[in-house]
Length: 190
Image (cartoon, rainbow, N blue to C red):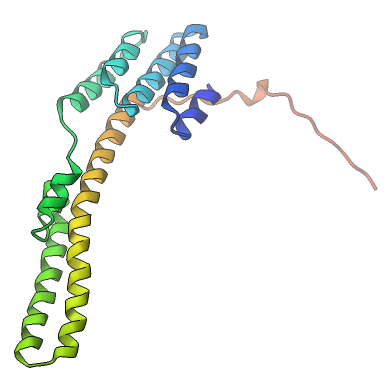
């Protein structure tokens, strides 16, 4: 169990799946078998293998209908494509809209508009030093909008995967029985 959890924490999906499957095969209670099947399904889904996640859940003894529904819901939708977010980011805010980050989209649109307005005003007033500074800042902000569209697509995909994995794992958590752990104490007197 601990090896499986450690492998999940280290993002070693193959090892986590292997250890959860081993736990499921050696477990003597249905609760532990279900926990292990859910863990194996989570590892396989994080490895982008929904079919393997379904297969792991099919071997669970308990009621895993909600977990199976989470896998089906994840598999039914497609990930956002980061390159599409970047291309849409050429229009400030649109890359964020593609990934459903509406607050970031509004912020990007407003700030890019303000910088462009400042550039136009300073150019009309022949304030070329301020214009140059604003142009540099706007160029930086605008390129950040393009990158932001790419990053927003990655974040959206990760949030979707995390939500599905959380639904698969469910609320059940194993806790070690500390009464079974041998304790050693060392007394030193001076």
